[in-house]
Amino acid sequence: MNVAVFGLGEAGSRFAADLAGLGVTVVGFDPAGVATPSGVQRVDDPARAVAGAQLVIALTAAADAPQALAQALSAIPGDAVYADLSTAGADLKRSLAATAADREMPFADVALMAMVPGHGLHTPSLASGSGAAAYRALLAAVGVTVEAISDQAGDAATRKLLRSAFMKGLAAVVIEAMAAAEAAGQQQWLWDNLVEEVTAAGEPWLSRLVSGTGPHAQRRLHEMEASVALLTELGIDPLMTRSTVESLRRVVRDGVPAVPPAPDDPAD
Image 1 (tube, helix red, strand yellow):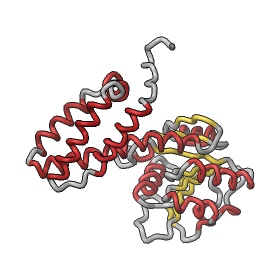
Image 2 (cartoon, rainbow, N blue to C red):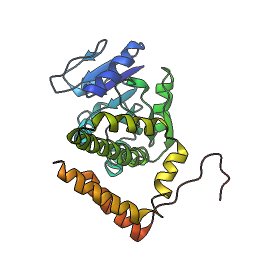
Image 3 (tube, one colour):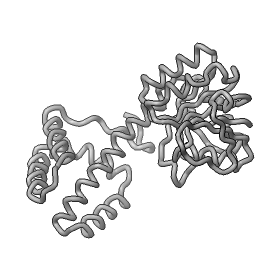
Image 4 (cartoon, rainbow, N blue to C red):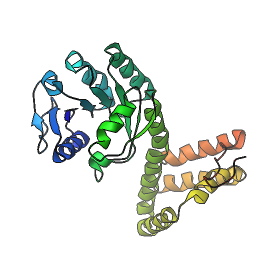
């Protein structure tokens, strides 16, 4: 298999090196002065990178995704799959898919669902779009599992960003709480407590976080207003905690979304 990789930053270089390590012919292009991964042929022209490619993988920033596709569009073989792995939103993914469709080229909107460091080419991923099944098959040929979810570009991106609203928000809350704990001289205690909570987490725990907020929203609102006051006294700007206060005010007014039944629960 011949693969072209656009973008040789942290994620792109790892994907390229892993593919090369599996015996795949990998040609990379990146206009930036980044290192060339082991086993990868580096070229200075994107059209040369895609010559003879069966798969083009673009691992760029979302803002660079349109240019990545346009830079060698006419040179990409007609039967090649173009896979965009940027963190672009669904609208941009659909726009890229439309551009690819003008050339009757299969397009895969690929969403990486975990951090690439530690996973590399085996990072759990979802694919959607006209080229999703073909992308899955090409990666399966080298022992990599990809979940193809639909033939509509943007579906994978939507799922990733829904998850990101939680994961990145969780990170922001932990960072704010730890900063306050450090100011209060309670950093080790809070860290140990959070580790214990997260380690014990499961579906019932997550369900209680949502369903338990509704009936107790008024009390929790007062509790979080007190948390805002505490963080302010400690010299920490309570950005995320203030947002929680506003969220609880919304819950008091509108309630909470329904929690889906656990997989082994009978359908309602």
